[in-house]
Length: 137
Ligand SMILES: CC(C)(COP(=O)(O)OP(=O)(O)OC[C@H]1O[C@@H](n2cnc3c(N)ncnc32)[C@H](O)[C@@H]1OP(=O)(O)O)[C@@H](O)C(=O)NCCC(=O)NCCS
Image 1 (tube, protein in one colour):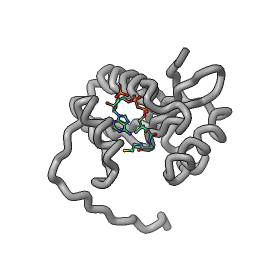
Image 2 (spheres, rainbow, N blue to C red; image 1 turned 90 degrees about the horizontal axis):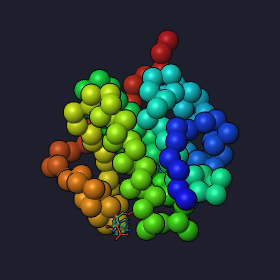
Image 3 (cartoon, rainbow, N blue to C red; image 1 turned 120 degrees about the vertical axis):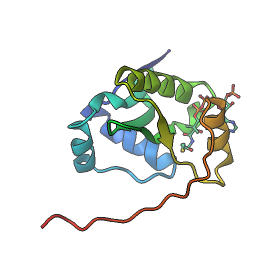
């Protein structure tokens, strides 16, 4: 039985392992503390047999939602866990009045692209531009 709920701090080590197993950077506790001040209800985990088996980090800036760091335990994939996580996250975006949700996928990541397209997330031609900001003085 899969359950989806909001992240709690005792989940951190399991979430870090999921991100590592998916080849993703692990967000530090400090970065997550800052995120959780803003919209903690959008940081979700999936649980099965009391183990954390999936994670997704949503953010909402008041105009657009973003989906980040989705990862499912490699031994539990293709059982609908990511679909459950995104379904719950979408309900939470809707409850906030969020009109559109974006996410980034590497163009060569065929599995992830197929997953997102199965859920109705379609590619846009925009190019991501990014610049690091200086640390506050
Ligand atoms: C992508 C990922 C999150 C999918 O998680 P999941 O729990 O296996 O996904 P689901 O079981 O909910 O898949 C739903 C549907 O998406 C599609 N899908 C999912 N993974 C797929 C894959 N590797 N190849 C092709 N289609 C896929 C299928 O249509 C699937 O339905 P089906 O199993 O009945 O055919 C998981 O493979 C993962 O953690 N990958 C590494 C991290 C990653 O790529 N994250 C996303 C970055 S943008």
